[in-house]
Length: 119
Image (cartoon, rainbow, N blue to C red; front, side, top):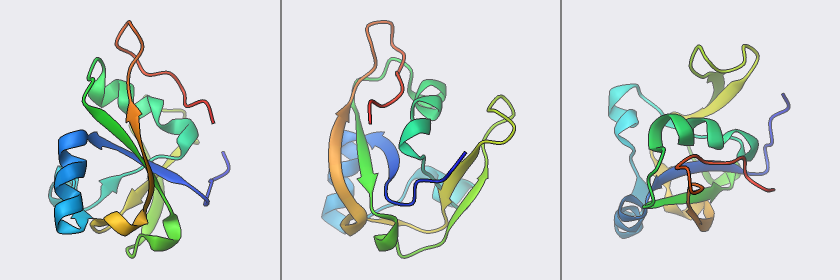
């Protein structure tokens, strides 16, 4: 898989995004738990969405400019059920709100699952 370096995405709740806008940065719980924030290439976003957020209707998709992240991004394996060669971007630091270039409502389909992004 080639890595799209023009856009990365992150899924969070609308409440988390609104809170991050107040502080200027987003700190996902994973930053304290495993040392990084899970990101995705746009074509991968449905995979973690379905694992972690199936049926949730309070989500937004943050589109990110990697050049504005201000912390290292490493492409690393996901979970064992992902294709063996698939790597996901992990942000090793807080996500600055200035790196967010677009915020989109992120809704599952009627069955509660997320489809691949259309772009």
